[in-house]
Amino acid sequence: MHRGKKYLESVKLIDKSKQYEANEALETVIKGATAKFDETVEVHVKLGVDSRHADQQVRGAIVLPHGTGKTVRVLVFAKGDKAEAARAAGAEYVGEMDMVEKIQKENWFEFDVVIASPDMMGVVGRLGRVLGPKGLMPNPKAGTVTPDVARAVTEAKAGKIEYRLDKTNIIHCPIGKVSFGVEKLTDNFNTLLGAIIKAKPAAAKGQYVRSCTVASTMGPGVKVSPAKLG
Image (cartoon, rainbow, N blue to C red):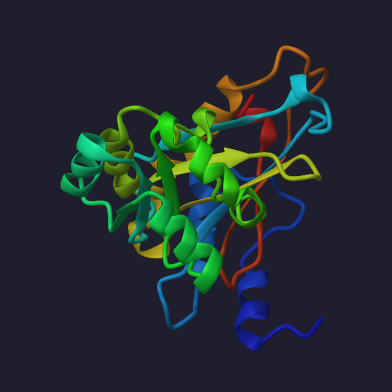
């Protein structure tokens, strides 16, 4: 795989044999982020669980103290007072069957988060095939199926992120932008890791956090010492 000159320069900043403290790792990531845009910083955590077993699933949502730096467009499925409350809370799109048809007929995906009131899940269920693979299907565990849609909209706008295992037992999550600086990114990192550790399934055996890497959009990964994480 061909790597650009800037990427190779960034690699030189990293001691491959070392596992860094979180703030040190994030400082290294920031130094190595040389793209012309404000790169997103992501965390990749490999867990000692088997996601094929229902009792070893790790999934949830957390509001990051400093948000993600991303403008989030919210689609809400609700009716009546709940629809009004969602609009008042700042949801860009609110609807019922009209939104289902727009997505189905126009292949419309101008949104980042989908929230639904419980009574709308019969309608939203029709979109399972298209929303599921994109990770957009509302889910009670993530707080996106809720009677309090207004609060869910406010949290989504404030920087709520969902964490869940992929097929290889790794969680991938954004924790902000390079421009946030070390302090804010470390706060967000600690909040996310704290939530993941708290969500440890009772069935998980052995070392829970196997490895943890932080990286910017275009930069190389920097390893964080799992011993310090739990």
